[in-house]
Length: 77
Image 1 (spheres, rainbow, N blue to C red):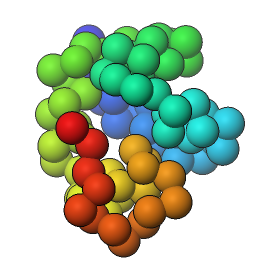
Image 2: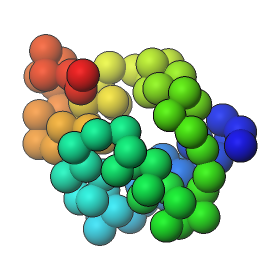
Image 3: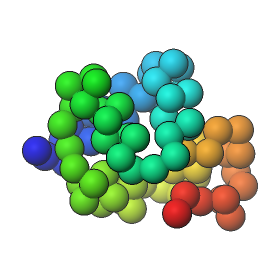
Protein backbone atom coordinates (compact mmCIF):
# COMPACT_ATOMS: atom_id res chain seq x y z
CA UNK A 1 0.00 0.00 0.00
CA UNK A 2 1.20 3.46 -0.75
CA UNK A 3 0.18 7.05 -0.30
CA UNK A 4 -0.04 7.22 -4.11
CA UNK A 5 -3.15 5.04 -3.96
CA UNK A 6 -4.87 7.53 -1.65
CA UNK A 7 -3.90 10.46 -3.88
CA UNK A 8 -5.06 8.63 -7.00
CA UNK A 9 -8.35 7.64 -5.36
CA UNK A 10 -9.16 11.23 -4.39
CA UNK A 11 -8.26 12.41 -7.88
CA UNK A 12 -10.99 10.06 -9.11
CA UNK A 13 -13.37 11.30 -6.39
CA UNK A 14 -12.92 14.90 -7.59
CA UNK A 15 -13.98 13.90 -11.12
CA UNK A 16 -16.80 11.41 -10.35
CA UNK A 17 -19.99 12.95 -8.95
CA UNK A 18 -21.47 9.62 -7.88
CA UNK A 19 -18.31 8.75 -5.98
CA UNK A 20 -18.28 12.23 -4.44
CA UNK A 21 -21.76 11.61 -3.09
CA UNK A 22 -20.75 8.23 -1.68
CA UNK A 23 -17.70 9.83 -0.05
CA UNK A 24 -19.87 12.60 1.43
CA UNK A 25 -22.20 9.98 2.88
CA UNK A 26 -19.39 7.95 4.45
CA UNK A 27 -19.68 8.09 8.22
CA UNK A 28 -16.20 6.88 9.10
CA UNK A 29 -12.75 5.99 7.81
CA UNK A 30 -13.69 2.35 7.26
CA UNK A 31 -16.35 3.33 4.73
CA UNK A 32 -13.85 5.42 2.77
CA UNK A 33 -11.36 2.53 2.86
CA UNK A 34 -14.09 0.25 1.52
CA UNK A 35 -14.92 2.74 -1.26
CA UNK A 36 -11.27 2.91 -2.24
CA UNK A 37 -11.15 -0.88 -2.39
CA UNK A 38 -14.22 -0.99 -4.63
CA UNK A 39 -12.27 1.14 -7.12
CA UNK A 40 -9.11 -0.98 -6.70
CA UNK A 41 -7.25 1.61 -4.64
CA UNK A 42 -5.81 -0.18 -1.63
CA UNK A 43 -4.71 1.98 1.29
CA UNK A 44 -5.00 1.88 5.06
CA UNK A 45 -6.38 4.23 7.67
CA UNK A 46 -2.96 5.64 8.55
CA UNK A 47 -2.29 6.57 4.93
CA UNK A 48 -5.75 8.09 4.59
CA UNK A 49 -5.35 10.14 7.76
CA UNK A 50 -1.92 11.37 6.62
CA UNK A 51 -3.34 12.41 3.24
CA UNK A 52 -6.32 14.20 4.78
CA UNK A 53 -4.02 15.91 7.29
CA UNK A 54 -1.93 17.39 4.48
CA UNK A 55 -4.90 18.57 2.43
CA UNK A 56 -5.79 22.29 2.56
CA UNK A 57 -8.74 22.82 4.92
CA UNK A 58 -10.92 24.37 2.24
CA UNK A 59 -10.41 21.41 -0.11
CA UNK A 60 -10.94 18.92 2.72
CA UNK A 61 -14.19 20.62 3.72
CA UNK A 62 -15.50 20.41 0.17
CA UNK A 63 -14.64 16.69 -0.10
CA UNK A 64 -15.95 15.61 3.29
CA UNK A 65 -18.75 18.11 3.98
CA UNK A 66 -20.76 18.73 0.82
CA UNK A 67 -22.19 22.16 0.30
CA UNK A 68 -20.26 24.00 2.99
CA UNK A 69 -17.21 25.08 0.98
CA UNK A 70 -15.85 28.04 2.91
CA UNK A 71 -17.33 27.16 6.28
CA UNK A 72 -14.08 25.72 7.58
CA UNK A 73 -15.24 25.43 11.16
CA UNK A 74 -17.13 22.27 10.11
CA UNK A 75 -14.18 19.93 9.69
CA UNK A 76 -14.31 16.12 9.95
CA UNK A 77 -13.40 14.44 13.22
